[in-house]
Length: 209
Image 1 (cartoon, helix red, strand yellow):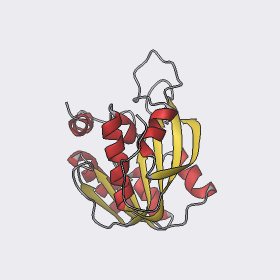
Image 2 (tube, one colour; image 1 turned 30 degrees about the horizontal axis):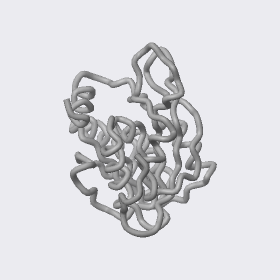
Image 3 (tube, helix red, strand yellow; image 1 turned 45 degrees about the horizontal axis):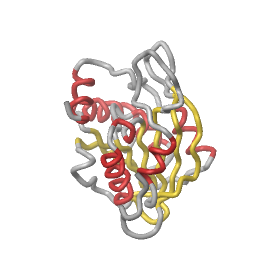
Image 4 (tube, one colour; image 1 turned 90 degrees about the vertical axis):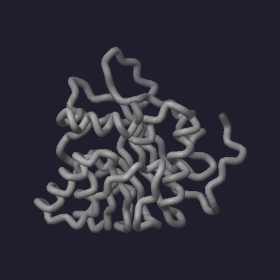
């Protein structure tokens, strides 16, 4: 099953564990304390829209994309109820470009980490790079491989895997340990990675493997 099909199936079967019905506290904390000035923003893997709606309420012009038609339908309903001016689009991010680029801020909560290979994680980072304007910021929430667990949870990546995928296209501004808020008996450990786009075109030269 492809990554896209996995997410589609999860929403078709009901509310997946990551659909918590409110904005992620890591996003809220990063945006408000950095701070990140309201701008055009792209949420990759927006799910049912809670994070995008919160960003719109802070003054961001938000485009949310997701591979699941069901998730996007729910996101549109939530945005209408909240009177939040968001645009939601069904899109396969690795294969298609989102309209509205360049963006000043990109956010993904558990999308980067679903790719098992260095190559696919690198492709994901390059796509984010293409969508951002000069000095654009990318915030990614990533499963943390430092956690030893016996229960199911999000994919886990090491700090080295993260750096290998995003360099040299992004400068890592901060990489801190936190956790995911999820509908599970425990809260899995996460990396909160804030990055800035480096100048110049996407380049895969001289990457460490």
